[in-house]
Length: 253
Image (cartoon, rainbow, N blue to C red):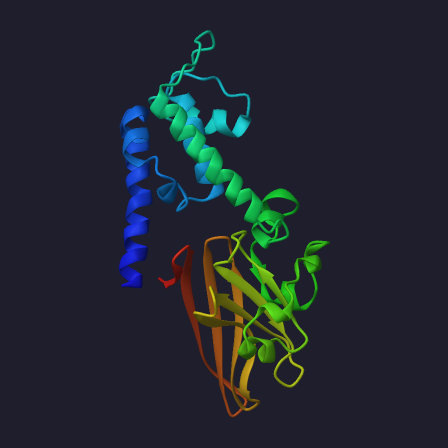
């Protein structure tokens, strides 16, 4: 049932954008202007959707990113001298988007990796070596989440390490754990949601002579994990696993 719900949510967001790209904005506002539907979208998506109401009417944007984005749309015709007037439905649609944007802003953890990466200094691609050898951007260590916020099982694994929110949602989709458990050796894990799933990212697992060494490259929307298998202290095999980082979970490619 949960997977079905997530599937419907994704389909609805796609539905919103299919209207946005091909239909009159008035029809979009009438059909899908509900608060619940808009809450399925990210803050950047909401900003684009809100401004599309005005772009469809020929508004000339001062923001360079919006001007560049809508400038690529075949339907966008800037009209500097036109007075932009919204219908009642369009105005309600814009107001609903602003309401949801305000909710998102209020709930954002401005110290999450996503915000830091986009507004302060580039973090990605993130690797195990960069994390463990402390070659991270200055100030990133301040993104710590208190261990008491974690479930008991994760508190034990954390054992002297740090937890970071990757995304800026009130309840993060993903958290990066950097630990020195077990045996004082550093490890990295990617935690999905409320401990729905834990992915090993970095470190040695198993006994010394028969172990698996993990390393990773994490981008904003993708993850590559390399796993070296050792047998009797000799490298036996190497495999690479690729994943997409989505709002509904880590999906193996």
